[in-house]
Length: 273
Image 1 (cartoon, helix red, strand yellow):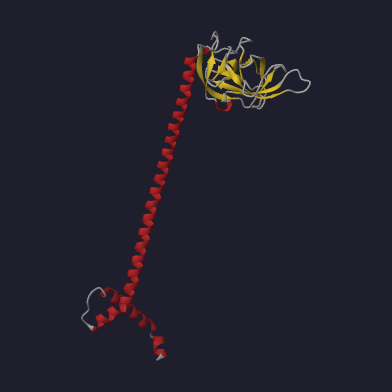
Image 2: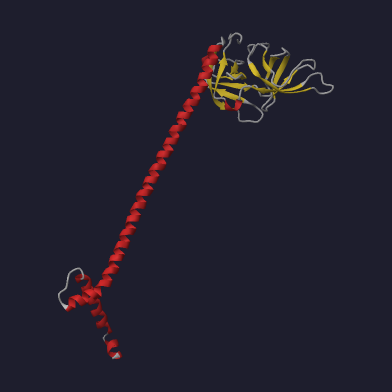
């Protein structure tokens, strides 16, 4: 018997597969004969398996399509969010610029000085020299030694001019020295740059009263800065034994790190109010 099965195993396997195939084909129809019912019974498990595989593949395909569309929608949303953020930044930048320009306009209307607005288009690139580059030059009436200010206070003076641009020596540069007055006491002093965030207040005599918070303004001496422009406030005063003058520091009122627009006072501008 075993030999018979081994000898005809190919025929037996082929016949079994044929019956399975017939069962798959005929399982969807009602069979009237014994063979039909038998074949249907043999093919039912195969049909169930095939149906399960088909349903599984359909589910996988559905999930894949869903993920593809979800990824596309997520990318579109990311782009829309990025665009909205850029638009919001643009709106905020315009709002900030409007605030600055309103302050500049109010300052210009409040003073009789003849001045023109200018934008900061460059800054010094060394640690030993502090300057700005403006977009106004000799074609706009700017000359060397024109004072440069903001509504907050003095920025510096022009020291180099071309046709369409000019360079400004900042108040904090060591080469800058401005004749000034302590506003409360009227003491005559000299404000000198230090390359740092503050300036030195020189020639403040030991007999003069001065305290942190005292405002210092230009004196009008020297022929460059009109009288009465705010330079800053005294931030430190120290009376050193044996010294004739106080050691004092001034905190400039203008924020040099955030300058974007300034005013250039043109020649024959008169005095500050």
